[in-house]
View 1 (spheres, rainbow, N blue to C red):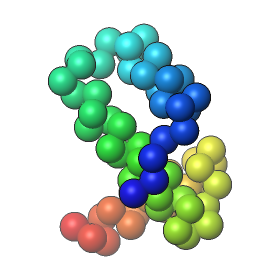
View 2 (view 1 turned 90 degrees about the vertical axis):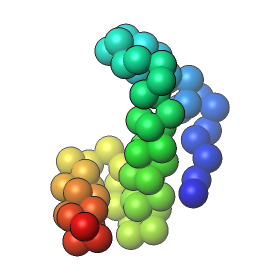
View 3 (view 1 turned 120 degrees about the vertical axis):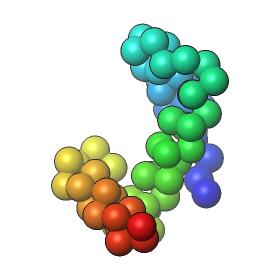
Length: 64
């Protein structure tokens, strides 16, 4: 699984804090971000495109 670059990790942490995500849940959010970025890299999707999120969700549904 990909490791988040420090700048992205810091920005993501700020976003989690801004949205009042409890500290105990934050590792789960980071894990799913890494899964999503891995998916985008593996299947050639642009991470910032909404269609990539939809494709990721379809892939998760396929896997059950």
